[in-house]
Length: 627
Picture 1 (cartoon, rainbow, N blue to C red):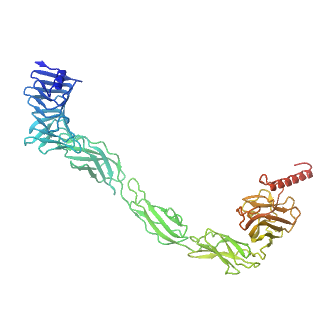
Picture 2: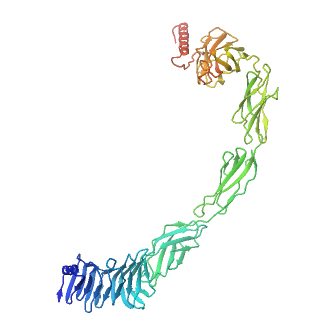
Picture 3: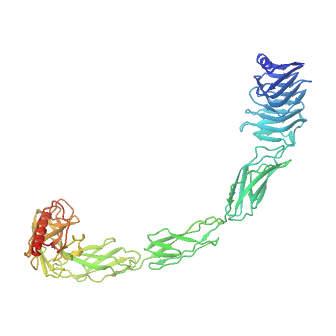
């Protein structure tokens, strides 16, 4: 008997379109040997044994009568058809059919007992088996095409072909169409389904379990699926199904599910458990509308959920109403909208929010307080504080002169001041303020009495410190005259006085109008001699400082101010002439032990510093040099 080496077989394959293992010859291909036949036919008349090596790219393979092929281990790749008239020993090896040599149907004939049989094609190739029970597989059978071109498994000769799988054999089938005349018998149970996912069903008590078919279908077609839950619940599905509904679950309990496929051999390997899933019951909120409300009341809300879980309330319109617990606080008239919610718990899904809107009716507001008036030329400026009870929202204020009801002014919030015009100079007036909304209004007590200026160039009033009457006159500046003027306590200044500064006759606050760009002289006469250390202090730009344009001397009873519209002495914030001069200030002196912060490099500051140093020196001399 003649033996042919693998190298000799390779040389023959490279030189001829067909490779022959001659009668009496033996070819052994051991690991890691590999023979590539480049689609040449392999005709075996002798003996071919794969002992861990491989044959690649064979075209048609034919085993002649009396010849043998043994695949102890290794792979024999066939690109054409398979014909076995001799002896074939599958061992533990693999026979793999693939594309590359032919797209024609691959026909398998003879009595063949394969271990691993692989039928694959990307071109939708057909694989034809002989009728009868001449084909067996003891290891695995792989049928694989592509999504667009599945392979075809058929029978030849008009009879039924049967592929018998051994007791432990399994079949893996993807994108393969098996004709009705091809049957599989025996074999293993299916593999484990994959991608098991459980999804709760709205409404509670149920979950849908889905999966992907197992890659290994076993020795025969899948006949169904069984889903088992933990700690309970189950369902079954047909062979073509990939989901089923599990009912009777307990809401709020976490469940996992496994899926097992069955075929003629019985149940297969169970899947991995799904991720835990918890079903929740559906709930709804019943929230009656509270109905129209009157401002000043505190309605209590009522709502319930079908789950019997507590309902929470929140205001959607906090400017009109707020809510704490179930009690509503009404803050303004208008439309109040409240939202009721129930977020759920492990056993109950959150309820859909429910909103209710209802009108809030206003009531008449309370009376404004602190009504005061400042006289002007044929007018008075009236200001007040808003009432504590606004009745659900104030829409306006109406001011009226008590002595002449036809003289009025009106503003809308947030303003709390307006000017009444057309008054008679020299006549005394008081004023009331009425807060108004849709429900009516309430008037205030009268203001203190004020008398519009009898002379727009002169003014006199009692000092707020009780020292006597202070008179003021204005000259120059064209038609410059008082728009308003008043004497106020020093504590009413918008910026507090410097520490230690006292204004013995109070704060003089006036506004001039009709002024041109020339100098304006304001003369202030006081009821008593001015004290030592006196200066005329002015509030300018939010800071107090001595005014260099003022003449005020200790012992004198008058002070004279020189002012310019848009210049020195004008505190209206406009750096150019605009016809108005604003000037709050007063004569003042530092109390003993007092100190003031004076702007650096100011002439006023230097003068005051010299005065303070002189006063300190005289005091030291009087006390014998002690400080």
